Amino acid sequence: MDALGQFELHTALGGLGRSVNFTNSNLMMVFGSALIIATLYYGMRPRAVVPGRFQSLAEIAYSGLFSMAEGSIGPEGRRFFPFIFTLFFFVLMGNLLGLLPYSFTYTSHIAVTFGLALLVIVIVTAVALHIHGMHFFSYFFPEGAPKLLAPLIIPIEVISYLSRPVSLSIRLFANMVAGHVMFEVFATFVVLLGGAGVLGSAIGILPMALNVVLVGFELLVAALQAYVFAILTCIYLHDAVHLH
Amino acid sequence: MEVAAAKALGAGLAVIALAGVGIGIGNIFSAMVSTVGRNPAARDAVFPIGILGFALTEAVALFALLIAFLILFT
Image 1 (spheres, one colour):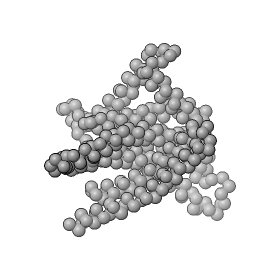
Image 2 (cartoon, one colour):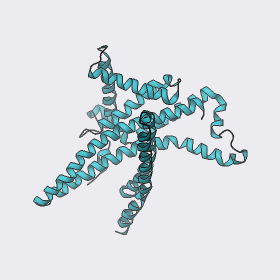
Image 3 (cartoon, chains in turn blue, cyan):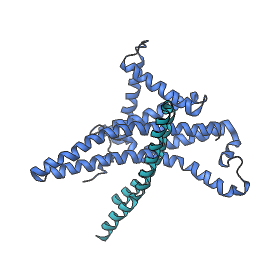
Image 4 (cartoon, chains in turn brown, red):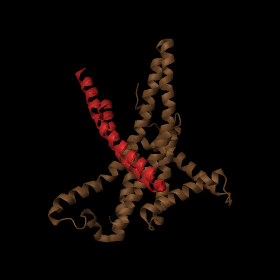
């Protein structure tokens, strides 16, 4: 069976979608963003002193991410908090909505994750250049290192700086692809065993049960990868603000 | 036929990297467990770092997996 067929792009919304190349990936992005905005809007509307469930959700997400941004960037983190909050929820929605049957995981495409990672790295570099000016380039040569090692250290530091968007995007994309391919592989076992008589059907319950467990595991991975994406962005911003 | 066999062998060889990743993730969590065991108050401070280390190590596993997928499906 074709394990990668679930990641194919199709145009959505009929003729209108075809004319502007609006794909199912874009549709899920719009839906995910609308869901975040709706959750936060309706969550914050009651403004109760003792929050209900919905309000707690919005408040816990806000305060948790705020303390993460402030804790890992420093007091300057407040300025970058909206960016990190948006990034976290966009990635989280992509990961979570992708787990619904018949939906599409937009974070499973390297074009999307690399776009996000490129945005992060451009912003980080711009912030560093804005704050430190030309002094930023001292980042590539640690203080106190022997001058003789400069030809060795500088290329290594530059390469490691430039490989950040690559590792940031591949981590998210590969996690999502691997998880969904795993679902498909175990679902294939179920189908194959189901076609092999009564005994096969009885054994087929095992991969089916494993798939249920995997859904729970993927829920964890979805939240974890969004968190990792956000905290790595925070760490890069910390480097940009403080230079080491 | 030889090409298909070589692809399967190559994909299998590509995921040998997972041995190292398994050791690495085991190390991270064993260090985390012993830290929290010695000083339970440090839990909140240690947890994000542990998760970060886990994610960075897991990325290596996923790079290997990606190579295996590239060999198998392209």
